[in-house]
Amino acid sequence: MFGLSFGVGVEMEVGQKVRVRRLRDRVNGEIINKLGQIGTIQDHKMTDGSGVGWLVRFDDKFSTWFFEDEIELA
Image 1 (tube, rainbow, N blue to C red):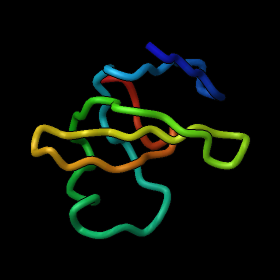
Image 2: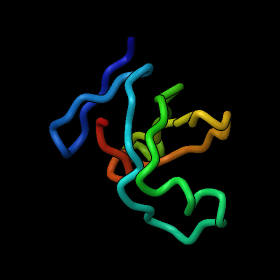
Image 3: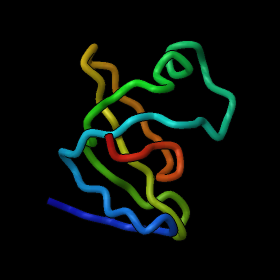
């Protein structure tokens, strides 16, 4: 598994369960409805050289990217 920890001191890895705790940007209703929901980390990517984005998949098969400060371990 791939683990990364940036800023918050919590290492996240592909396969872990996470909860959406906040959204940085304006988003559509489908993503807003994911606030408080739990999903599974599927992948990661460097966002701008100083952060990491996480691809999270939910039970309804919907997947989207979140910044590391938008999610927390569930």
